[in-house]
Length: 261
Image 1 (cartoon, rainbow, N blue to C red):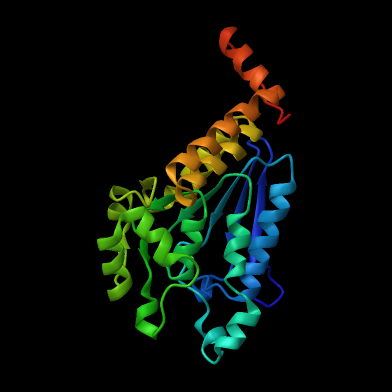
Image 2: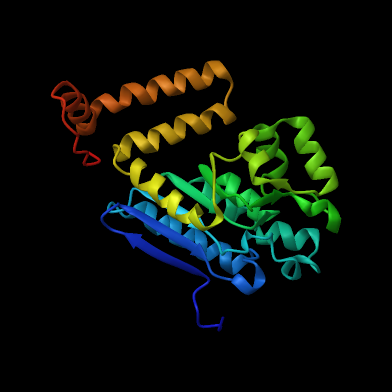
């Protein structure tokens, strides 16, 4: 890949109202340096503002979704360098995307790459995918959410084992433990993720945003607070044209035409 090639490729699926965002450092197994993360965040934020797009899919290459952070970029950094650069803030930018974003994972999904996939809303994995947090092998720990999101997804004991040993998890186990939504043949991972995205994109764009917000609140709030938040979001949707259209279509036994209003 030449220096002129973009680090992230974006392909809009106009009819399906979806977009495919592909990490484009295949020779480096899509290692996530600052430039790649900035390009990814810029692309997702632009698509988040685009009313023609309702759902996004993020993927990598056949060999790797992303094999981790770019170690060469960090090896000589001091604690002050890391604090000033605020590299972890790029994962926060991904987390703040309002529309649903699906990860389509093939091959290695390690370190910062696994943290990126977990920051997205759901994961479709090829059967050969491998998920892991191997930071312990280079003298550090996960720093972009790995210790927190992995533990919430698969439980303390298994997350502790993975993080302390650095050993990866298979796609099948990731599905069985709830980290991954679907496992499909490797060659179908992106296709299946796009098909799922197209299905989701037929729903009300406003309801999709608020549904995503409500589910994420389950991880970030206590139950009483989260239930009250869910209720407020539910009531808020009754101020939308999409709610009126959706319920009218249900009663009239027809397919609703959601406009995001």
